[in-house]
Image (tube, rainbow, N blue to C red; front, side):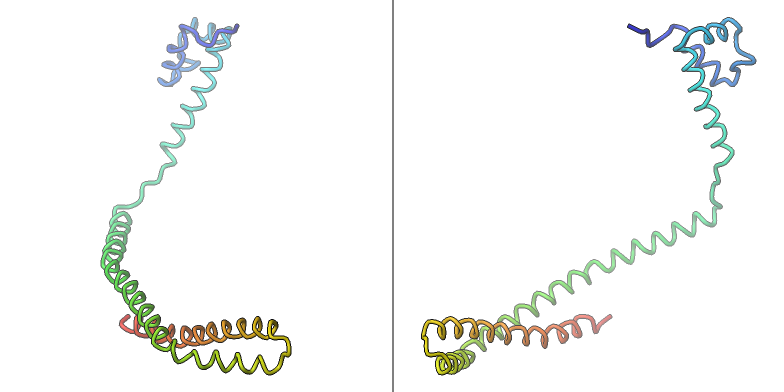
Length: 170
């Protein structure tokens, strides 16, 4: 089993962080680190980390105070705009729900008027097909398609009007 730690390891780390490794460090410690695998790895890794830290201290670019102020002012303005728009978003959702409700009410009110159209389709289809089962299946499908067509036309007419009224205030 290999040994994963050494009693001299903290001293190697301390010497590297103090910037004394290996030129100004204790000669006995440097000799030990050359012989001990754990201390050698610690010295190499700590040196790399220390050098990278020192390099990053000089490469850091702190933005100018005016730029920081400008960014914070833009962020504050954006946050206040989002806060102010929240009630408008709710109003758009409520308006869309009301429009959908009115559209469903209109379709419900117009539904009894659509029944004669269904009977007319039924009679036309029965006249073309001698087999009553085929005629019944086709008439049922055509009736559903007619209802869906009327609903699609109603939605296609109501949706742009609803959007116009909802977005006209902007």
